[in-house]
Amino acid sequence: MMPGNLFRLELAAAFADRRRIVLRVSVSVLLGLPFILVDMPPNVKAAGIVMVILFTSFFGAAVGHAKLRADLRFDRLALLPTRRALLWLDLILASALARLGPTSIVLAGFLLINGQSLTARAVVVLFGLFCSSVVLLTLLGIGIGRIARNNGEVHLFGALAAGILACISGVTPLPRRLSWLAATMAWNPVARLHAMLTKLATGSIAVGLTELTFVSLMLGGIAVIVVLRWISGGAFKTKGVDARDIVVDNGAPLEA
Amino acid sequence: MDTIIAENIVRLHGTGRGIEGMSLSVGAGQCLGILGANGSGKTTLTRLVAGLDRADRGRLFVLGGPAYPRARQLRHRCGVALDTPAHWDSLSGRQNLWFFARQYGLTGSALSRRVDELLCQADLTAQADDPVAAYSFGMRRKLSIIEALPHDPDLLILDEPSANVDEAFLERLVQWVRQRCECGKTTWVADNDADWISRTATHAILLSNGRILAEGEVPELMASIGARNRIDILLEQSGFGSRPKIDGVEAFHCDRNRITAELRGSPETPVELVRWITSRGGRVRSMEVRSMTLYEALMRRTTQQENKQ
Image (cartoon, helix red, strand yellow):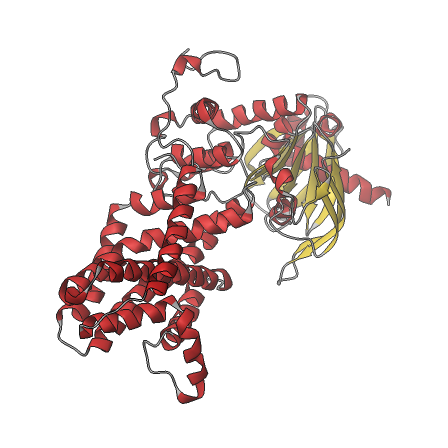
């Protein structure tokens, strides 16, 4: 694939290294497997799956961005005449898409075991919440990667932020003093995802039309942006250029 | 109007080192070579000119606009190769170059053609589709340099381009820079290789501790050293302190068992100097006579200026 923009470049880099792909998928699956196979309370099962998504998306994005800065690739991007907003958008979308694969395998495994009550509506809402959670967690992860000065700081800040995120998303019980944060959960896709997975594990799930419409629009929006960024990357493959057509500085064709 | 104008710029790091009150200007069609020891401020100054850092004080303009933050249109007219090559290592050299060329506005067959042309000129065609992770450091440096060139920028900024790069590519780079100068384009080169800078640059500055120690036009500096040579002699014993009175021997300096001097005039002068040393009981272990470099010409100018003051 010829990367005509940062979105394609990051995606191509993420999928070029087979070892990295295997590691990403296997680590996510190994982390998620106990919560899929072992019998445990529904809310614990759901919390486990959400934590796998949180760690993979959030930490992956944070560490990836810290590396981008540390090896000076980010400096090179800053020198390009590309709009800053597009650079950030491409970084977030590509990073989220690269992490969507491994986590979706874990989610699929969870649905296979616990998805008896799943309806078509519920699938759309679940997938929408899952995608928006991964994008949001990637955005936050990149934010942490931007603040941290090195890999050590990323892990320190990342662990702290992951704990806070788990807490405000209802994955862990919220302390009474912070109960006012419960109001934010309605707009927090991670909290909504956790609630939905819990319902799914208990076997009772009902999705309202408003929720379906809202999540569908959100999902559609993300899909449109992804497709547009992909298309803006230009030609997928390099067009063959006849070596005789290439002229070097001294005016001689390349073959000469 | 000058391409780069710096007025009393200051940029200090936490250690207190950096750039301390520097003013300079680089005109269109010029190539400025920046020389200096490690830690003299070459990379700090280059990062300021590239638009990666903001000066703490002073004013810095590049291509008619503020150097930092740099407008998108101005970034489009610049090409920068930093001292550390940074690539997406799992992708091939062609993919990396393609990305940069596309960002500078090349599309379609012009993009393919330019990518192939640059890879060929950097002698990377055979490895173009290998992952960059498999490249040697020198190959990465070459790739990094050609990634700054696809759009033939009005201002090309190169930091340490000669480090670990083969002679053939360096010679090609000299030709590119000369062609750029003829077309009225500006080049900024920070490097430690004074010989390469003397072949490439039209103007040169010597940095020391974040200040300009000496500056001048390269042809004039090279003419000032004329037929001068430099001799380095290593003696068997130390403590050889007396100075010769031989025509053509200047700046004689003896540090323990190491003698350095500037020579001009007759080719016999080195022989006369060695004869003088042996007549004073000195035993020569090794000696080297070579042409003076641009770096030494700049140092010489510094000494002359200090003597005048």
